[in-house]
Length: 171
Image 1 (cartoon, rainbow, N blue to C red):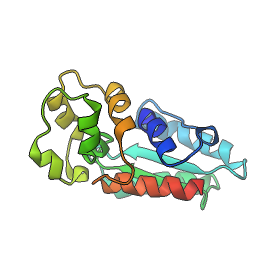
Image 2: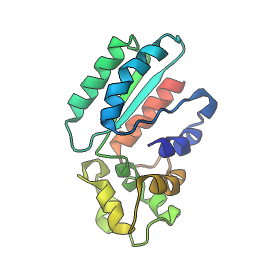
Image 3: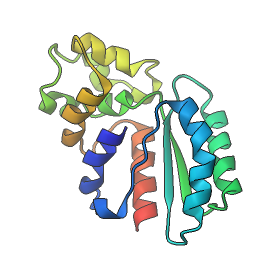
Image 4: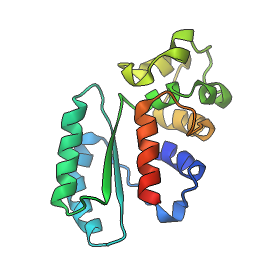
């Protein structure tokens, strides 16, 4: 996710010097470490927070409610947003098939069904990309594809909502 955000932020005219991306080693690590980190940043009045996590076929509302509760406990209500990526980050890539084509990262043609589908409803977008490139990995895929993404042209609602949250927090 960090690689994708690093590529996306400049396209949204966000100065990378104003943003700190904290990556976690999995959702379990994030939910364990996040409360302390939120309390620490809450002391800085100008700090705003965007929390992103994959849904991973879970209950989106439950994930979001748990993260919003952490934000509220840290005193960051009004200065933070939570976005749950449906189902996983690779859905954003499927939502921008022009980026997939431009990246030249895939070794097989993109099936027509992926060019027209609702990317957020794909149960396992990562598996879809693995079918199109043997040895697909998250980081190399993000590095190759994200730099070609167009923030104004993506079929993924979760992507569009995330872009909206970034714009709101950085305005």
